[in-house]
Structure formats: structure tokens, C-alpha cells
Length: 250
Image (cartoon, rainbow, N blue to C red; front, side, top):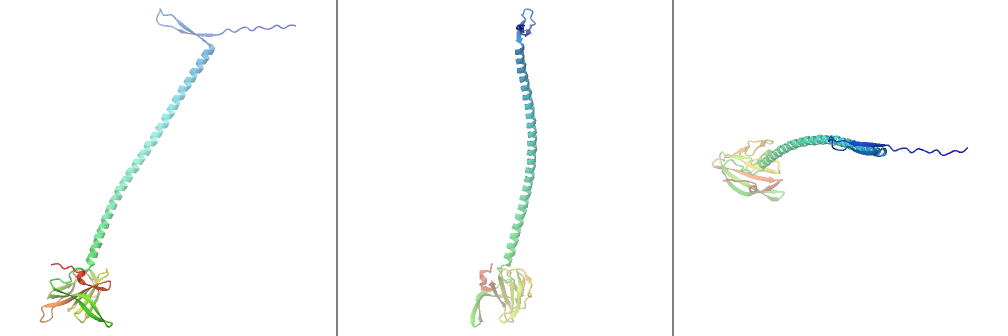
């Protein structure tokens, strides 16, 4: 039995028409024909465009949100840094004030120390009034040798006081053969001053004596108008010339 070929009917193409109608009665109606495949292509293109726009808008929204969050973080960081800077500025000002106060305190202490040191130097005149001055050397025999010690011998009238030439502590009060009495002041800086006179001292060993403090009151011997007082200075246990330290005014 012979089988014949079945002829397939050709499928007619479908078309879609888009009409353009004007509100002008005289205008012609325009139409455009589209195939099904072409519409599918247009649909895909439109979908892609819509998705692209949606993606772009979404990205812009996300980027704006991230940027806003970053700006907020930056603003908080800047505000925090500004607060810290203000605190540091205040701390620096306070430290500057403290440094100024400490510097002033150190300067004051330095001045006080300098004043104390100045007062301890035996540079003052050892008498309360005018006197004649005779610079000479005291000669002593020690271990068979003649030793010379520089000194000043003062001659002053009755009522003149022997006073300390600098702040010091009385390290010795003793009788001696040449003038009668001897007083030594240790000034605490290597200097020791020696005062000799014929009247009994007004101080005792261990007394703290300020510059100008009373040591003796001179009293001339009978038939004399003046009394003598010897003055010497030691620096680190070595006798030096008193005139090297003595400040004589007038």
C-alpha cells in the first residue's frame, strides 16, 4: 500500500497594526504594521531598558544612602576631633599657666637662695660705726716656724659694736692672750670669720647670728679713747686677706 506525502499547510504570518489618528478630520489615519517577532524584539528591548533604569535608580539610591551614612560618620568624627582639640587646647593653656607659675616659683626660689647665699658671704663691715683700719699680718710660731696670717686691726671709740659680717653660726667662743676674747662664725659656705676684742662676747657657741648681729661692745681701756678689734677671714681653712671680701662704703 503506497503512502503518499502529506502536504503541510503554510501558516499565514500574523501582523499587528498601530494606528495613528489625528484630531484633525482632514488628516489621514496612519498605520504601521508589526510582525509578532518584531514586537517580541521591542518587548525585550523595552524590558532591558526598564531593568537598566530600575538598576540605575536602585544603585543611585544605595550610593546616596552609603554616602549619607559616610557623611554622618565623618561629621561625628570631625565633631569628636574638634571636641578633643578643644580639650587639648584647654589642657595646653592650663599647662602653660602651671609652667608659668612653676617658672615664677623657681625664679623666686632662685632669688631667695641667691639672697641667702649673699647674706652668708662675709662681705659686710664688722663694726657698727666708723673706725681706723690697719691691714697687717699676724705672726705666729707654729712647730718652730713663723706663720703669717693676714688680718685687719680696727680702732674704734666707746659704744661701737662688733657685728657679724655675714649670716653664720658661732663655732667658737674662747679667751685668748692678745686681745682678750675670740669669736668665730662659720658661714656654711667654706668661709669662717674671726673676731677678737677685749670685752666679753654677747654670744655663745651654737648661736645663729644674722649679718649685722651683735658680737661685742667695744670698751676702751682706762686712759684710752679707742679700743682695738682684730678681724680675719678663712676660706676652706686657709687665711685670706679680709680686704678681698670686705665692702667698705664711705
